[in-house]
Amino acid sequence: MKQLLELLGFLALVQGVAGLVHEFTDWHWGLVQRIGFLDGYGLYASVALLVLAIALFAAAESRKPG
Image 1 (cartoon, rainbow, N blue to C red):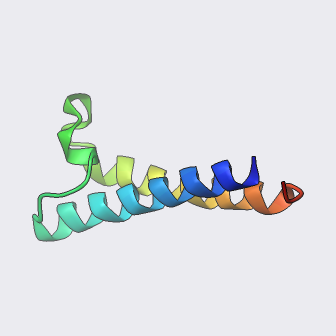
Image 2 (spheres, rainbow, N blue to C red):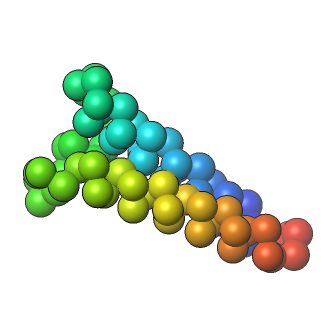
């Protein structure tokens, strides 16, 4: 379970960073800008993904190995 939380946290972190890079540099990579209902809210969605990643990493740390 710990490894699953870490994997999900890593994916959320990568997508959050990709969304922020897209918002500030117009590089077209990541999934946030490709989701239609997030049009105009990409920055907020990216920050939310970063916060989610931190929460998932904290949850993984609180779990016992295994």
